[in-house]
Image (cartoon, rainbow, N blue to C red):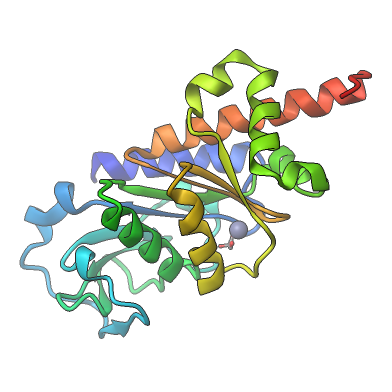
Length: 240
Ligand code: 2HA
Ligand code: ZN
């Protein structure tokens, strides 16, 4: 139906094919205000107002596609509208409504996603996408203490393949283990987003922000390729 939805569906398929989206792992939110505002200007809500604990004033009236809670990425790939929803932030920034298509409750991480979109806007950035997924090799590295240091991890990943430094120019932030879906995790992530566009959550996954979902995927893919090379090189006898 919309080009942006095709891109979301394509990336969701990659996440599944990569093995980064077991069961209902991962979630996506994309600000589609520019693309969909005209179409949905007059559209009433299909849900009641759902309150948001924080005040997201800068996102008032904006539209987001968000994957549904408990939905599988492989199903999002097949049918983004049956496995996600379009929401509109209320004018006071303290609630949201579902406006399209089915009445599908948004991801358990919705508040974290919206909070990140809001903080990025406050930083003067026009980021459209928050993408969270579970890339195997990057997560494996977070089980090793020395790679929980952002600077050390960035240098190591950059040194594996030349593309990595060019693609992930700001390096990677690391957030120590915090329960998924909590405000604490969102807050700790936002601190790292001031310096990086990709954040690794210890023993959990990766979060990338950007203007375009395909670019977010490419960034994570390049980083994970570096992690794979490191693990293979270690198995082949690399001493470091
Ligand atoms: O939605 O990945 O972090 C499932 C998750 C939560
Ligand atoms: Zn996760």
